[in-house]
Length: 247
Length: 77
Image 1 (cartoon, rainbow over the protein chains, first blue to last red):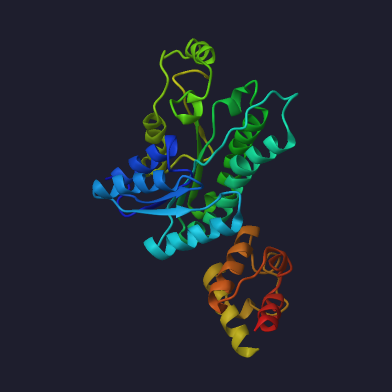
Image 2: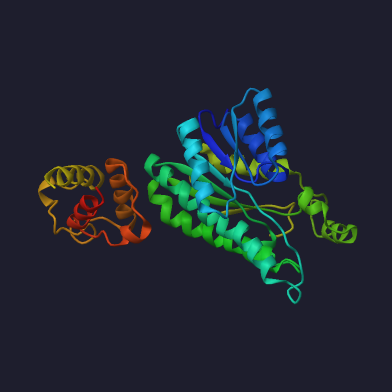
């Protein structure tokens, strides 16, 4: 059990990569806060599965773009589990459109949830972590934040922003024992990527040296590593979990 | 006033490892007590816990000396 006794908050944990992260951290002994924004039933199902496997889970609704609801979530976490050791910023949305067609609202929604949300949760979590003199913050970025991607100006800008925020937070918090790293998934099979056209999927497969799409668990294992003591000498880094797409 | 000063002094001595005699009202956290910017953020967090109050980011920016902290806390009681 690599995370025995630790408490982890995973945002956007009701499905996809977030749900896999919640299950993986719980399987290694972490008490997990399963955060969701809208999908209550799915979040409850993830928590129930964790409990059936002998773990501890708390379901908590919060919109990461809203500072008050994030604060309430961390207060509840500290009240229930007594500490906050690991924060995984996974919550994210897409509103894809070509730059020339993108509406302000599509831009704002994605920046608010995917980038400002990480700022809000990181700021709130840094407080108890600084006091404890230890903490792990792991941000789920995306490989497109490194490469760019047509049709995703908002999403790419947010994810590139997350990588920059990761580095800055890592520098600011290092002296207090808090590490901040990012994981940049490539093409992972989830609801989000399921929306893409078959032709897009085929062309992406051609760009992956390992010739397959990733599973949410592939990302979760990288997160587990960064959350564990094995990664204690790493901070400010972005791990690419992408089958070799970007080197 | 004396009681607040006493508790503020204890927090500062514990956090910054300075001598009690250095903690005077006019002492600046950064210039006189060797605090870096993150230390000041942490001090404000500890004042919040010690006095069971919330100090907004805007107010916290104006707390630069020991006297600023004591006066602020007194004003909110």
